[in-house]
Structure formats: structure tokens, C-alpha cells
Image (cartoon, rainbow, N blue to C red; front, side):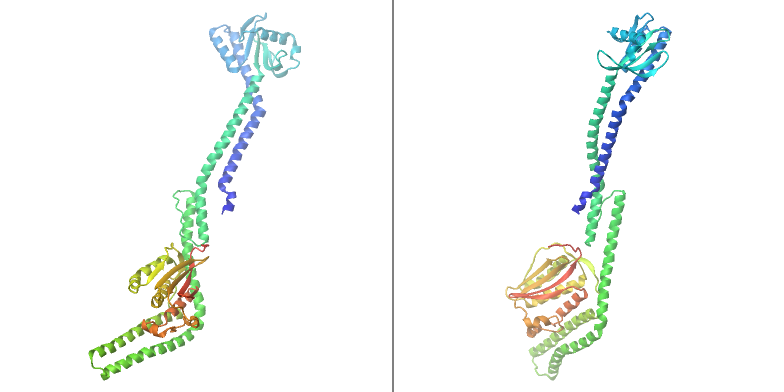
Length: 499
């Protein structure tokens, strides 16, 4: 996932918009640098023509010396940065915006009577009574925009504006645009980064949810409460997660059923024969005992109350063992014949084991057994919850009946790549090596005398074998010098590497 972050949408948004902003500002700077001077010059021409119209009108109306026109005249000169001089027909100065107006007066006369002074200039605009030129001043070596000519009443005029001021304005405008542009790009990049973060955070959340779904972990849900398209996508992913979980449950159950059906067809006849043979064999001894003690009671072999009670207790005990054995045989028979359907579901196996251990806590205390189990976190598996408890219960009751020495039972959960191994260890004598291969067989007893003492039937481990095979999972036993460990495995619902 980290390797994909170099293609982050947030980074792409920020880069694209920053480049777009920088490109826009660079284009504006180029346009300003290329065309702004001409634009200013065009505005200057329009300003001079407008000034000519106003002054010409005032001259025609004889208002050129009025106070009202003086104010307008100053506004024209100040607003447009124009120096103006007006001469009468006899070259006397009528009005000027400069204190040192003699320079403008001589320049105007040179234009009128020495046309050669315009040889190096560039004509911008020309009419019958005036023209506009760009002139380089021989004394200051600066360029000016000069408009000169004759008013309608015969007065002479010269408007002059320095071209250098236009160029400086253009340069200042370009520098200002460059500074503002760089600042705008930085601020915009930061704003876009923060805004895109708001957009990409829910997308990242959906990415993490989908990654967990890849590993069949459907607990993660999108919790955003906005009304955007992303929130709609999150809602659909939540529904997809629930649908996938239900579908996988159905598929796993169907898959188990299919695998069981393939094998069941070939085993039914064999198991039926084996079942009848085993039942008749195992029931032979308790039935004989019950019959013998019942006949003894009938014949009055012992008339005292204590003997009769003993005979009755033997009969009741053997009947109870027969009842228990028949129940287990029926359970085993249902498993082997496939009548007891395995329902695959997702549950916390840690919680199941803890609940079972709490239920047998009193029995363990009565037998002075020490039960050890670490505080494991929740571990979710795919299995039949009821059958899993049956397997663990058989292992644990077997451990309680055979525990010896330090009287310790140790329960462990070991996480693997795709499975969890659940083991039950009890201290005591190990199983003889020649018996290990037979302990999963029905009615096999390692120590028959001890098994009969606690009422064992030799069917419990056969039930474990049938359940684990029906769920297609591994199981087994390990001998140690100080005891025996029985184990079984279940498939993790979140099949990631926990090592």
C-alpha cells in the first residue's frame, strides 16, 4: 500500500493545481511584459486626445483663463501625467503646467518651424491640425510622447508625457504580479493540499476497509456521515461486506456439505455394519453384569440390606454407563452418517473456551486441578461453534480424568498463518507409543481398568475425529515426558500472518 502512495490523488491534485496556477500567472506576466507598454501608450494617446478636446472647447468658448478651467486643467495634467503649454499666435504663453515652461515653448516652436527635429521621431497619430509623436530629447536622452499643433482659434499647444514613466509603471506592475503570483502559488498549494486531504481521507478509509475485506475481515465498516459520492460509495461497500460475509458463510457450509457427501456414499454401508458390531460388543459386558446381579437379587444370594444395596448400585451404575455410551454412540453415528449437519459460522473461539472453563471451575477445584490459560485476545474462526465446544469439552474432560503428578491442565492458543491451534495439556503419564495410533478408534481404551473406573466408553476421541474430519481440519496428540497434549486446528476468519 505504501508503494502506491507515490500516486496519491492528494499529491496529484496539489501538483496539477499548483502548476496550473503557476502557468496562469506566468502567462499573465508574459502578456503584461509584452503588451502592457503598448496598452499604456494607447491609453496615453486617448488621454491626450481627450485633453485636446477639452482645451480646444474651452479656448473656443473663451474660458481658458477662468478659475473653473484652471481646476480642470490641473486635474488633466495631474491625472494623466501630462505637461501642457499653450501659446497665442504671437508665441506668447497663455497657459502652462510647468514653472520652467521655456523648454516646452522652444520645443513647440522647433516642431512648428524646424520640421527636421522630428526626423528621429515616430509618428503615433496625425491630423490636419495636430500630430502625436514619440521623440527622444537631445538634452536628457529620454523619450517623450509629444502631441502638438494648432487649436481652432489659432492658439498653439504642446502636450508632453515622459515615456519612461510608462515603462517604469509596466516594470513595477510586472514585479508586483511576480511577487503576488509566487505568494498565490504557495498559498493555493497549501489550500489545495488541505482541501484535497478532506477529500482523500474518506477514500483512504475505504481503501483500508477494502484491504481488510481482501483478507476476509468484514468487521470494518465505513462510518462517514456526509452526503457526498464518497459516502454513498462507503454505504455500498458496507452492504457489499455484509453480502460477501453471508455468501462466504453459505459457500463454506455448502463446500463442507459437498465434501462430506462425496465420502459419505462409500462409507454408509461399512459404518452401519461396524456400528452394529461395536454396539453388540460393548454392551455385552454391562448387560451380563446387570443380568448376573439381577439374578442374584432374585435368588436371594444375600439377604442383608447392605448386600442388596450393593447389588442395586452395581446395576444402576452399569445402566448409567450403558446410557452414557449409547448417547455418545448415537452422536458419533449421526456424525459419521452425516445426519448432523455442520454449520460454518464466524465466532470468537477465545470467548468459547473461557466460557467453558468457567463452567467446569468447580469440578477442577474439587479435584485440586490447576487450570492455566493466558489472557488471549479475541480470535475469530470459521467453524461450527457447537461442534467446536464438543471437541474442546472431550479433550478437557479426558485431561481431567487422566491428570496426575502436579495436576496441571494447560490450555494454549497458537496463531499460525491461516489457522489457530488449540491445545489441552495435562500433566501425568504419557500414552504408550504403541497405543497412539489406536486412540482415535471407537471403544479403544489404553487403560481399561482406569477407563471403567471413571465411566469412560472409549468413544470421546472418536467423536473428536468425526467432528474434525467433517470440518476438514487437522487434529492430533503429542506425548511429553511429564504429560500428554491433545490439539486441533480451526481456520482463521482473518487469514493474515500473525507470526
